Picture 1 (tube, each protein chain N blue to C red):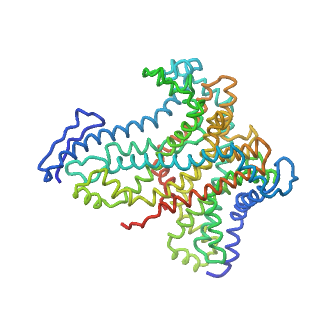
Picture 2: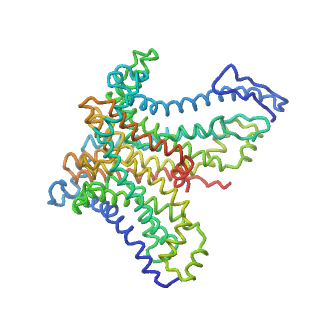
Picture 3: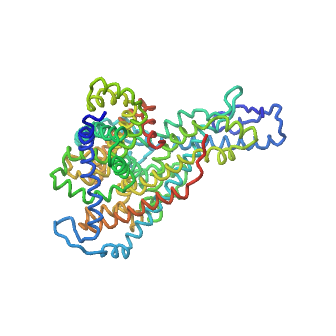
Length: 308
Length: 307
């Protein structure tokens, strides 16, 4: 199979690799370089300024706020999402009661229905979801507050996105809402591949469902949970948090910068304030946070791989 | 342990009784009772979450048929009559038709491009040994974990210098480039699972590498292409960050941007019903497609994460 092999390889790789290098790799390299300059983005002239942008960043209160919020997004959103998803998936697949003559392990009734419904938000654009919830959160005419009024809770009428103490939680809840279903389906697939004998053995030993979950299901699903955590964390640091914060909160960035996140701050510095070099500096910080997050999760989550 | 319970439908506390037949363990009764309460409780939560997921969507559909006064006055009431004019207003006056067309063009072009270029690169990386193979592979894979926003700042000027800013074909090229990492990752794994004998037979019969790829390997890779195609379709159709940065001309807006734009401008005009009609209009085709192709969509979206 040697004849014309290299010509073929080059011919097939040239276009995809070229496109990728031009639009993805090259901008990444450039942006690290730009973070050491005073480039505004508006004019082509710039000079090297060493670590000026970095020391400015360390003195920037808004940067620290955005960093804090981004870290919360990366830690809390996956934690709550995966926790809920594991619970739902376990109930759906293993939580069913035994029926006479049926298999030892069954899901609850209507498990297929739950999986379909839970998955709905996953196929919608995060932008559409964010818009929808921006209206639902509206303090006067939004769905949530009027629902509260409807059930007699007139005294509880939070400002939601308008309240600096609540806004960030509201935004994070939307991300959880929209991604739980994906992980329910993902974990369901994982749980379905765990052999039923393991559950039967646990049941025979008199294990409760609680024990079964922590001693059988979770250890066997650990790899999936871990990669799910990294995947979700990267999304929550990047594109997803950008969309929800930019669309839902005023400013954007929330009252008193209460919801601003790093990815939004990069965008605003570059395309609103004309400080492209400083934006790339924050972007480099975001890169470091993302890689550190992935490394920590992979390291902390390392367990002996269980074969089954 | 032969313990059976009467199947209690959904959370009906009184209906959940425990019937015990010759259970060998004496303490089983207590655990079972706890089990029943837990059952009712946990099934209740499943129902609540289903309602929480479905409710906002139902609310949006309902609202899209109401007039502005009742949207503000009583957000949860049913529409007094079906205001279809909201929909026609959103479709024509609010430019939803243009946004749809732009999205179809961009996603159509970039989906085909992603699949063709992605499978070409993946095939070469999966099946041929050459110096730099691993390096190129990891270069592609690395793109999955880097924050895209970092690259978008210089990318804006790269695209601008090439005269591709605010053009449909420029957006297509960028979409393809940013879809390649996952596509190459997924399809490389897929091509490795295909048997080599068929390709070798074709080659012995005198087919060129290129012909072998297009006429033998691609048809064999169809299941993988469908999975990754659905994944990319949804990702590109729902894309918000890339067009927000690179496609600022209102005439070229894609659906997601257009809706956000609409939310801002309708805020001034006070045409909320039109906006909700637009939102639902954008939501329904994807939801409908999901319900029809449910199995394939779920497989496509979860396939990568399970590898």
